[in-house]
Length: 356
Image 1: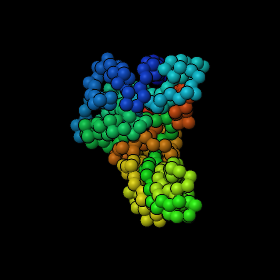
Image 2 (image 1 turned 90 degrees about the vertical axis):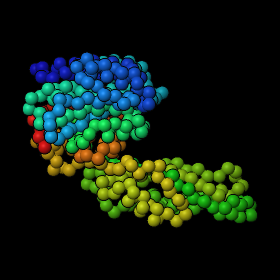
Image 3 (image 1 turned 30 degrees about the horizontal axis):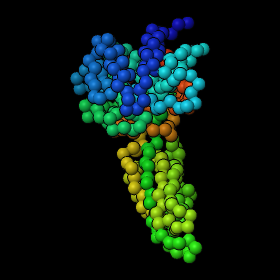
Image 4 (image 1 turned 90 degrees about the horizontal axis):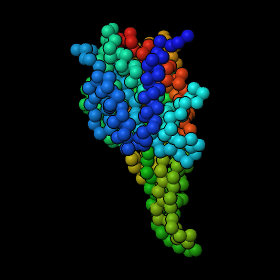
């Protein structure tokens, strides 16, 4: 039995094939932004653009709350492990292959089709914005941050990422720390100096064993991992400086600033400096009307360990889109055609009769 969304699915898949054929690595998205802008204009929409970020608005309903539909048009660089041409949008056995097909091209074209449907829906009770943005994969300053103040007040956001159309109602935050332990140089044969590497190791041991007391039912513990270390330049010279890098993933119980304060209070020898504290954990109440509606429709929810542009938003938001996060950033990436249909269907069904 044919799906009522067959036409939208065919158009979405054809557009996604065109997108895949245009390389759109982060900070080099102009070509695919041009493509999408042209597609939207052909639909009679007034497209606004800031660098490689696009947004369109549905006809305004005065004094109504506003929902933002957002996903990203940039991709990571293709790895050497690809066995196919990453820019050849081939369909084989119901799979559409190509770089960005899963992350997050399928979300882009599914949200776009949902926007087109909902914009003309007579029973719509909310304002609606579709924003297709750049530099998500590198958390760049010229992505969604560049246009947020131009979108106006947003009351709810749905961020399109591959979640298997499960609602990611919480998302871990990210903080990268640069640590420096200092000592004093000396000759190893005379056992002189103060070894900065040993000092750093004492602090690194704390990162390995400490547990933040507040554990999230959705996101689990705050995660910390020391991932890089550098010290010394000669075998017989005691190093006077040791640097290391720590990856910190916060849950909703701690802002990055709060986690940083706790970390600093436990450092014996090292100074730690955050590259940024802006990427906090984000999410939405399980009692929010849209989440309750999702549950009523049979959708499930989870806490996401991965980061997205959701962390840039200050409004209630959740992450949901077609595809599988495990395929993201992998060789021979693909999306199932039936996943595109599911994305369009679920987005429309969730929102067509929705009210706050």
